[in-house]
Image (cartoon, rainbow, N blue to C red; front, side):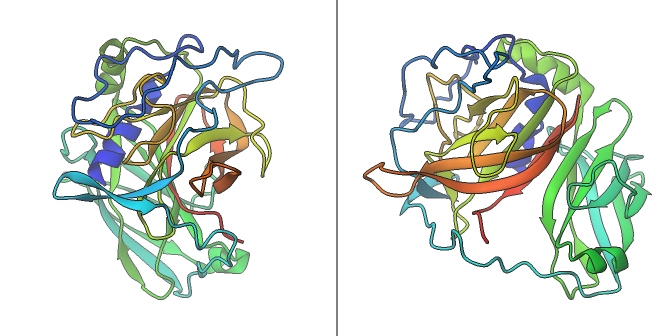
Length: 325
């Protein structure tokens, strides 16, 4: 999972200056089966009817992948057997939840001392915090959350914010905790401003100040990372009504996986990673994952949908799982 966090936290610096491809200097030498496609379709994400150059029906069905001994192994067609079935998340039943963890720099893995950690319910990123704490000199933290309000609201998911000097605010959403365990662990990550500012030069792209970024990694019902899916950020549930400016990019899935040009990868790769850049700040959007579930490529299916905000100058990451009832 370190690779997942590593590259998602690059995202604040990866906003494009236009709606063409990025010009990544590294399409990754290890990715020997990239299904290369022609250049991304011409569209204007800022137009009267916003589009997303990274949201084009894929030319492959979705597959599940596992990383075994540093190599990605194809597990065959992705498992979508749980799609549309009742969800099995349960509300916390303990009176208070103690969360222990460490805040680390995503790149170096070094501890981040003095980081402010905030917990909140669901996607209420600007609401009254459930708990706050500060990491110690070793980057470790402990916070105790009174669960009475969470239980009363029937909320099953929590989110966390990490803020520290010379870092970018980093949020982690869609976190599920075992209902009856009073003490649980969850490590968090942070990205430095220095690293974030260095990434545009490395990738060869520019950034629009004031925009937001969403990112994630798609997994199927069996927990495999999913290739062959495409991602939209929509203003409404159930259909891809693209948010102004939103542009999706996928990763190379090699030993040093990076976002790549749409001409190199136009859907999720073996690691399931994606990032959506240049989004206008919005209180509530829907991060959607779409794909084909059979080899006939007949019906583009909504595989996952997560309600999330877009916050200016902030990267929001989340656990992405199949859509349940």
